[in-house]
Length: 260
Image: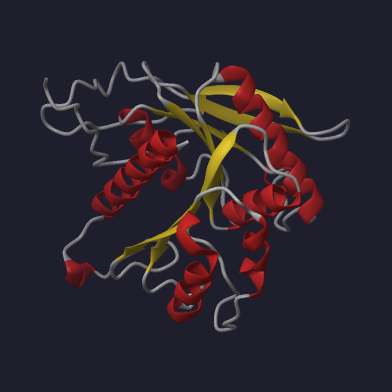
């Protein structure tokens, strides 16, 4: 049997509503005809509605509810590159805005509203993914809001949480207090962390993950900071880092599904 094609993201675009995938040589993914993210609206409560983008590739085998970070919304190039890369390996994504980002405000919403937004996004993913295994998490702030919501009341059907840069503490204020709620989460956890992340002291993060036990997996991205930027002297490109993140997510999701 032939090896499945793996998608390689070599560029990414910030075009709103569109995920652009540039496949590796030999891939059967056409960058012109690959699925494009479909826009929709999610009702959070009686007063808040937010935009969402869903990308469900043919033969999808899982769906990842992908929350954005504090300073940039769901159409940021990083978010689009992750969604495109995951689509290339058969993982659907649902991206969404938090209400403050929808309103173009700078201050994030209160945690309770963020939690409700993640919960509404997970419910929407459940509705549209037709029984696909579900995962949640996201970029920095969005990942932390997802895990806080999961700690308070587990999302129905979500098999695991993945963090694209877990913000353990503010810059230059090392502490593990922001990670204490993770002990209330009983699903598998994946931490995709740059080893130069200024928002996650590596010694503190490694100690926290060790205490969380076997349900927690740490993948360190060499020389990367919180934004996954690496020094030019390393010779690594942003696309190569994105590919490493996507491959790690793909492998971890497959492992969790197999063991569930």
